[in-house]
Length: 401
Length: 65
Ligand code: SF4
Image 1 (cartoon, rainbow over the protein chains, first blue to last red):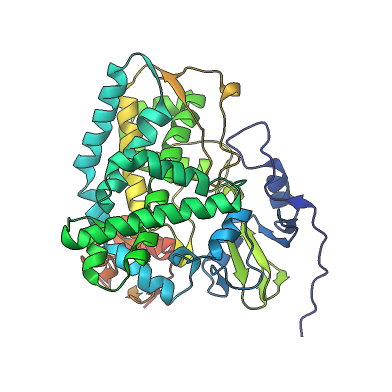
Image 2: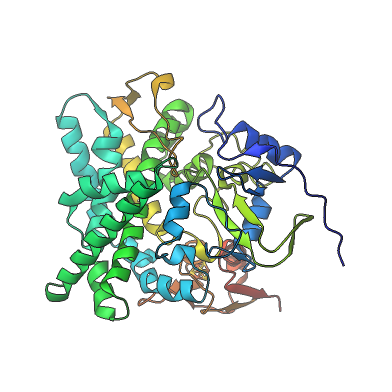
């Protein structure tokens, strides 16, 4: 029998505050990554879990079926009270393990495969140009989040799902509540319910008036109830607009703060594909990590974890791991960053990543091309970073051109 | 090099197609991986190794023959 490692006492808490550089992971996690890459940490609810910070370990856990994403497993770590509240309701496939996870996910993989997504390019490009036309016509400064970064992916995901974009105030407000780390659990539940209700009703209406959106296609399969389609739609709607919106705005900010990289990208627009991967790595907007629970005893990086141990996987420290990305604290648009973990890894890896990639490539290259004089219209120190949200970014990005 | 794919494992993220489009494709209906060339020529083998490495579902197995 293996002897159990002495259980170290928790010395870190989650979430930890960011340091001087708002793009870098919290200094406490970077220190853990250097000194004790698999360490103990205490969560908001007083529970103690493992914090996993190295690229190789994060990748190993996410690729290992002995770690479950299903929150019904005892010991599953919740990153907020709201997250725990949601897990007590009806889960979507991101909180399931295979084979159930695979069965449901496969109903959507066809919609996000590379060929399908690539066919959307002209439409997404048109949307990007139109948003910028409007923004530029409005004067010489704007909030890039409100006028471009948020509407672009929202319009696209509405189009794909078959959701009327006119409802965007409603669903953007709901997702703001869902993504707040400090939201009241009752509010989180209410936001979740009203979003699923709305989508379930919309789904019902597609029975008599089908279109070629994803909701209609799920109806046509005949395997799910309107409520199940509503929950799946909720997942796609929230994930589809918040993530890309924040990546777009934060990427523009990161480039403005690294003018030599920005110039490089302007001079070599063909670098955009790799630049997007590098920005995903450097910024890692899923900044509070991913949660899993061990369902068996597992030895990870020389440390023994027990069945029932909760694990928080820090994607942001993993994506700055010097072993994997030498000089990882620097943004370098010509780096080969393809092994980054910003979309997660393993069977749960982001379903929408081909779409996210395409949207980011179009959004950034169109901004750079159309706004050659782009600059920040506020002081960097005044910007409000989304520390309290599950998805990192800036609340507003005032720019001028 | 002999390439094996496991369609049951594949989660359809499409990295293989990005890394080595000459060797991997995705099925039209559901985005599941399709093998175009089980014995890729030498010049493609590095890309195939990368595809196997980035595949999040470990659905690609390489056999050195
Ligand atoms: S990379 Fe792996 S999971 Fe993704 S489509 Fe290819 S085989 Fe499937």
